[in-house]
Length: 581
Image (cartoon, rainbow, N blue to C red; front, side):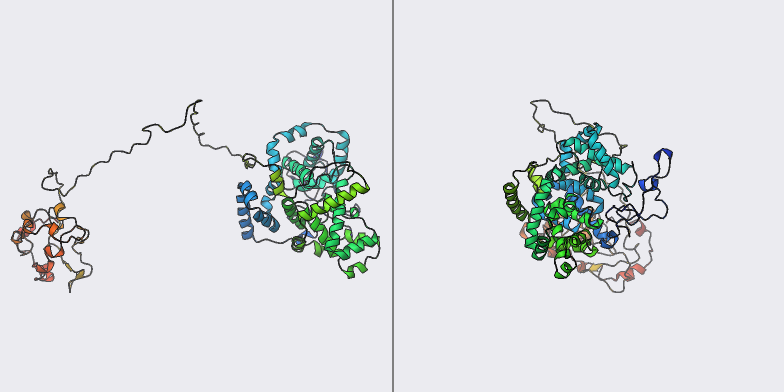
């Protein structure tokens, strides 16, 4: 069976069929590179873009996140990216926790760019990538880059075509880096790093992400001599003795140097070792917390493969041990298991830095000074952000799709001249419109008379079929429920007597005719004969209840309203009696 890795397959298995693009019409419907190379029939592409089962372990190791949980995580990440400076300074632990849970696929490229500091680097060096891309480059470096293009994930639909858009962007990124760092040049391990970034972001963003990884996360890894990776190998060896003593003694017995098994792990950040679902989770944590994640993953794999005596019995020699480390069991690379074990490894940034000083001192004692002096390593996104504080403009999110609005452009605000202070002018406040006075319909005797509108005729008691007077809010017996009730004004809501010309909004008392054999209002004591209001205890500025005419004293209650409603109107005088209520 052919050996399959992350996009790498032996030459005796499936060969990539290429079709010359010169024979294809520009208007052909074949859009992706996989279609150009003949993978249109019976092809199976997984959700990561790999064709033909090149990632046979990814489907099994991937953890399916429910859609509603994924939507919630996207909303949280959008909020963090909109306020990135505040989250990194004040709530970095929450950012780390969300990176450990996994960045949503739709926002992974943008989050990686923010975590690595590539967003700030791009804003501070505008048009730098276009300038480097327009230059020719070193022919020797370009020849080496062209030879490595087809080796980077050849079964991913982005890089499957020779000369396709994926390989063209990969060539542009790697060429621009050789021009950006001519003293370092091109290293073959940079190609898979750039390819992983290109799967999630455009070429310019991938370039600045590669710059940050090579300068901040893994400084000196890709320089001549590979001294930095050898020094980290010694750190790895010392940490193994503390985390898994049994594994350390076996490696020491077999005389297996760390550089033999951890070079590809560290330099490619496990992109050519683990299933793709696990690769993405490792990268999420790596770009947040730095190189300690790579050390932890390496220690977990060593402990799982060589940490028990049963496993050590199967690899008695150096060759068997190396073969075991090259073919790690899939269950140890599963996404959920690997992330859980990585988070439990007791290795921190301080442990790595302490061991780094010890191994650097030993290196200088045995081999002399380092030939390539690399800048200090940054442990994660927070350290990178602290070393280069970004401005608000650097973290501003630019829209990827610009739509022209049909609305007219806003009018520009007038600019103040020099020396002119901005202040409010006197009387610049908006004047409120004048309030039109509404005449009071209830005039006092001293107020001028207002023309009265023609009042609508109100039905008299004889005209109404049934009247239901209320006494203490209780209808009289033998009255229908739906009969209209005469509205009595509430005691608390009545205006003062001085403000009312008559009771119950009626015209003057002297002008009102008697109602149904009621005693004339003239026989009632005049208002002027009542005691003054000041001598009575006022209830909400109203006269006392004892001074108001009581309904029970009126003749309305003596005669049954039901009998009056049944009487016929005998005289025509009742038709001309108008009572205005």
